[in-house]
Image (cartoon, rainbow, N blue to C red; front, side, top):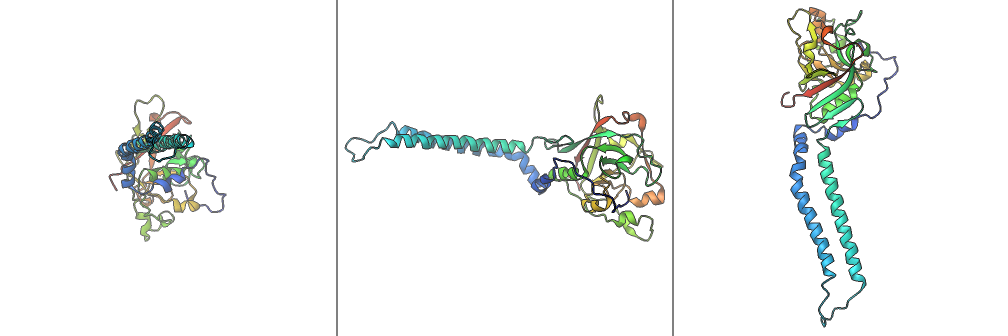
Length: 312
């Protein structure tokens, strides 16, 4: 988890969802508007479509209503053909416009999926493909019980309970697209100065939108909260309050690929507000996996990240 500068940069997977961050990161109000815009536009689309069709049929009907004799209006045999051509353009154009608008609005609420990650806008959640590593958090050196979910190409993937197919960058972009707000309140010193009791950065707790984390796999009746698969030393049950910290600006330093960290660490996209890094150093807070509740090592799982957008 410690910063490493000399190693080569980690390659990002193809099919990045990063563009969705720029397209959909304008906040909760825009997200709610996107969900209802399909229904609100339907009457307008139908009315506009009807007007275009009416105009087209008026042009067609005018072919069968020639001017009265003696009215002093010269008839041109080419005019009916021109009218029919213009009417055909109007009809085709109205069909194309209606199709684009209706299809575009419905696409806003359909799940957006890659091989590794799915954004389910209807349920306001992100689903990630991963494999389980039941004993990985019991590392011989370094901060034990630190990483819950890490991208498979990140530095910390070996020591994570779940190794994700999706990158931490794509997960951030997906959460942003759902309207989650990153706290961005931690600093590099929150990690590097954890052994210095005079430095308060290591006492900071991650901020940002709350995130519910669940896990499911084949044969499981319903998804399980991540908390049901962990123990915390010195506590009857694990204290977990996951927040979307963000922290992408630190990834050139860490390169850990950490998606969900069990402490308030600047190296992870999502951190645990219940315990700053200082708690590990001072109190020996350590998380462990409950192996008997997990499928075998290497088994595929689906991780579900659901931001609670009504809370901050």
